Length: 234
Image 1 (cartoon, rainbow, N blue to C red):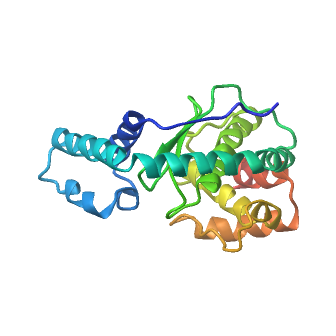
Image 2 (cartoon, one colour):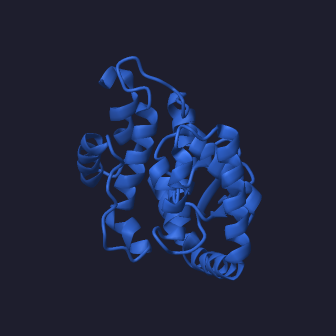
């Protein structure tokens, strides 16, 4: 059974998203538009930073309401056209592992990084095809939901699980690298009529090179992840 995925426009949710992302302090220069870089100055307090983000987000949504709505509706139509094929590919990759239950909600965003919450099944995607393709972003986040449920059930591993011999963010690195491998796999690329390759996340290049070779030789999710998530293989 496939998820009942809903899409929403909600500037308050996007405001909360922006505040959270900036507070986390990672990839912030990717996330923020250039005209908000000044809020990263250490002289600006967290409270003031949040006020600026709130005003900027609300103003942008009001000023660009027509454009945002148009992009949002286009994205919904585009996703509708490919969703059955996407779920078929995902089910094939994960060997018909059931999708985790929950109310899946994707929020349109005016920002440039798109966090997700595995527990609540919520995520963000670009409101229009500007820098990133909205439907590819949606698919990326949906892959994360089934990936983390798969490894929780098979290995007892969660998003924040740490391995003694690995980087504290090792599980995150594996999850993002796995997505990149799939996104550069021809059957998946063909779904989106994509010709360009996705670059691995900074710091994941070596993992990506090795994992991509493994996947290209044998598309077996269990054999692949056993090599990366069973400590006896380290």
